[in-house]
Image (cartoon, rainbow, N blue to C red; front, side, top):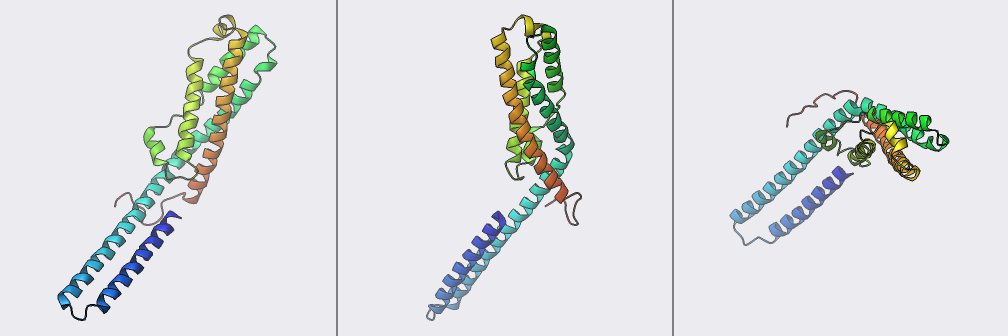
Length: 217
C-alpha cells in the first residue's frame, strides 16, 4: 500500500509539473528559446530525480523485506519451540493453587517452573529484531516484548531453590510471585502465538531466493 501511495504521489507530481510546463510554453511566444530549453531541462532533471528516488526506495524496501524473510525463517524453529514451552510454563503456573500447601509438592513445582523457564531459550539479538521491522503486525516489537517478559520471569526466579520458596517466603509473597509470573507467561504466550503465525506466513511466501535477488545495490 505504501508503494502504491508513493507511485500515486509521483504521478500527481508529474501531472502538475506537466501542467505548469504546458502553461509556460503556451505563454512564452515572446521569450527566447534558451529559456524554453532551460525550463525543459529543469523539468526533465526533476522527473529523473523523482524516478531515481522512487526506484531506490522500491529496491531498498525489497532488500529489507528479503532480509526480514530470511531472518524470520532462521528464527522460526526457535520461536516455535519457545511458543510450546511458554504455553507449558503458563499451564504449570496455573496449577499452583492445586498444590494445597504441600511443602514437597511446592518445592517440586518451583523447580519445575524454574527449569521450564530456563529451557525456553528465546535468545534474539538486536540485529535480528531490527531485521524483522518490515514484517506486518509489529512483529519485531511483539518479539522484543515476549523476550523481555520471559527474561523478567527468569530474573525474578533468580538463583533461589525450592527450599527458599517454601521456607523463606510467606504464603502471600508466594502467591504474589505466582500471579506475576502467570500474567507474564500468558502475555508472552499470546505474543509468541501471533509471531509464530507471522513468521510462518512470511517464510512460506518465499521459501527460496527468487531469480535476481541479491544483497547488492
